[in-house]
Length: 296
Image 1 (tube, rainbow, N blue to C red):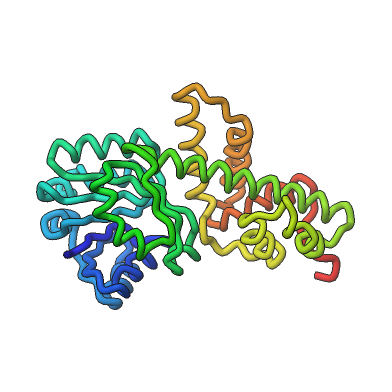
Image 2: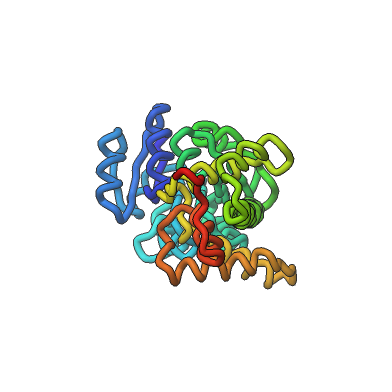
């Protein structure tokens, strides 16, 4: 069975390559021709959106926003213009629940299945095939996608109907990015108070303050390594989606709203292509203090 894969960015490129490594026949597309050439060199074929819709029974999208997903699917020459009844489209992008439900309903009218299946784990998880995959949609469609999910991640869970996966991803982004923010604030405090942040990290990581976020981001911050695994620009978009979605259902989210303003500061200061560990730069600027060991 041919699998279409549209979107070969930081996450999508290694995901497509992992499918190829497991013998899946992949037909790919992306605006970045260098990325396409790289995946084609690994064994994929290239095609435009309409051709992918025509020839692939399963199609995965992994792109920056819901507007781009809808354009790929429903614009003139898009996937939906040629997709066959009984096919299945899985969007693994981070979008809003409303956008996922829109795609689900429009494709359902054509007899085409749709699963929203955003992921967590960043570029390292995409490369390792260890992503956490959060899914919304019909069980039969989830079951059809499960063999591919098992290649791309180490956990895939159907949470509920269409939009449920996107809801879970927004909750995930609220937790991850707010945790990075409070970790950054704490380590700026510790550093300016005269403690060695590397030793503070080693002292607390085994206790209740320890977390996957702490272990992933503090070593990067100490090394001043802000090469993006999850760039601020993508997380900024996700946090904006969190705020807008929460407001639409009357859920106050004061911490996340403040986080969005922190990211707005980072946008103004040209930090959008840095890793989201770069949230630390905001707190460092406030305190005029860089998180680093005294001997560094």
